[in-house]
Length: 207
Image 1 (cartoon, one colour):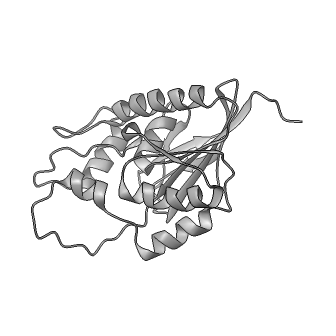
Image 2: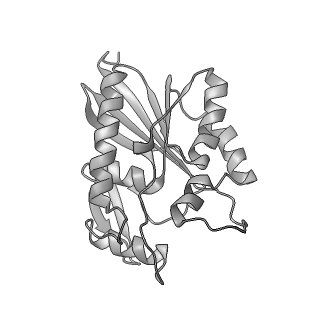
């Protein structure tokens, strides 16, 4: 018999966004990322997702990709979506002649690294832990799903996971020898966090 103090938190990032978009007017990097919708394949992944989780409270960042995924689960469960911008992806900042791939590589080695106007992994960790702690306390004993982004999820789990590097010198985050986050590009990331008395007791990946 499960403890009544136990609850489940699902963290979901749908990474299949529309790539072949041409902007005819000026848009910042952040505006492009926030407004980029799911691809058709991403929509299909969002439909399949509804049978893989079981939650009764839905939260989402205000990115189009997160909301585009959340809407299918909200419709399936007939539940509202609570939007919170604190669940948004890590801010990139000013790229200049650099690229996001370089930023990711640097941040994996230095959790305080960021570009001007951007956000480090440690800052994302503080932000995500703050908002998710509030969400958990507001929805005690309920199972929660949060539609967010891979780097934001990484930030939230950073202090709970073991850090290491693979043969390609890329960051790997594990829990009890299970790989939770790595550099593999997945269509969708679904991470299940089990809490008891508001403390994490297990973290796993749902395939």
